[in-house]
Image 1 (cartoon, rainbow, N blue to C red):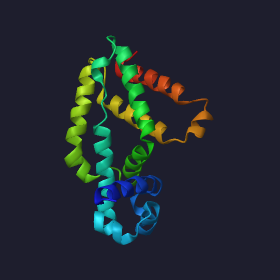
Image 2 (image 1 turned 135 degrees about the vertical axis):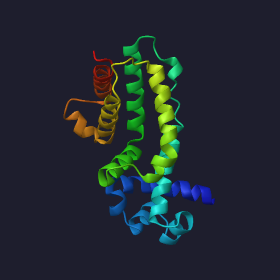
Image 3 (image 1 turned 90 degrees about the horizontal axis):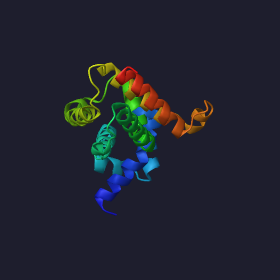
Image 4 (image 1 turned 180 degrees about the vertical axis):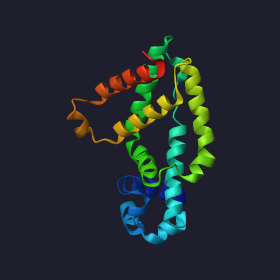
Length: 190
């Protein structure tokens, strides 16, 4: 197995550990065991636990930023555009729930995004968000706090166990519709 394959395998395996336990709660011993490697292998590929954590976060942003939102295929009316984008974001968040959980847990544990994310990844994220906002053509009623609210709601639903959501009578389709309804109200004021 190549060094690149080993790194990828380790990053895949340790994500759920960081999602469940956070950075502080994930020992190198537990991380190594989850990846099926020894601690020396972690040290060789990532330096230390912080290097591994930074690599996990960077990989999350690489994966999320590589997703094609296909904004050219949005419907002509504003409400339809908002609903379609929220549905797409819901499906992406649900498919990447471990990654969303890691990022959400970091913010909960530290009250901010990792510093390297703010400096290195945020310009890319903001550029993508700007393109999405331009494609949505929301008009003057949309407030930036509405976007933050939707982001938090989306993340919270994405990391919630599906069985817990079913207890509320909500499956993925119901949640997607609900997120669309909330987004329309918050962003378009209707």
